[in-house]
Length: 202
Image (tube, rainbow, N blue to C red; front, side, top):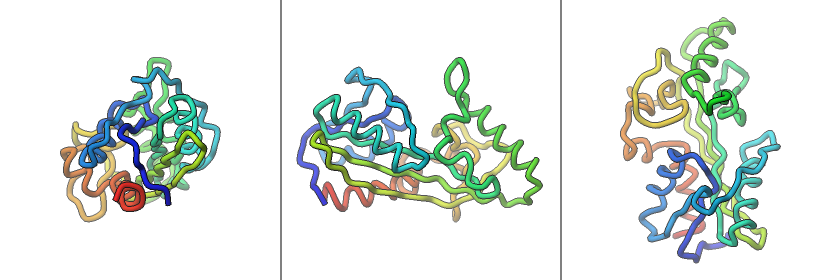
């Protein structure tokens, strides 16, 4: 397992919410974190059908283009009664001509659940795969998942993406009702980060 020894980490995302979340998690290690937009990097086509496949595409593309170690995150929500959809297509469900509309995507998921005839509770899980890649082509892979329920109606104004409809097991709050600190203690991304930190930063 390769250790991270640089002072700057490029996070291969243009998603401001995701960048902020990762920056918060990596901040204790004294590493300077920058996003893909800050380096003027484009977004590569995500042509794989798995979280790890797409995370690898993003991490290696950013590392090659910048000459810096790059961390990518491919994540999404799997709704079990919908055969684990949207999965790797989580963001695609929110795409519109005017950018991403996650309220629309959550309504779509709810409509499909109603059409499916499945009774509540509607089980779901958030998945995250982190890939840390170096410019020489080496990478390390760290997955994390968190189980919970798809709840309706949407609840909360915090967070981003599908957070208003996801209530983690053991919690009375949706992700969108938790502050960032509380969410970062238990999230799928935090679980993947624990593995990243233990293997590459500790």
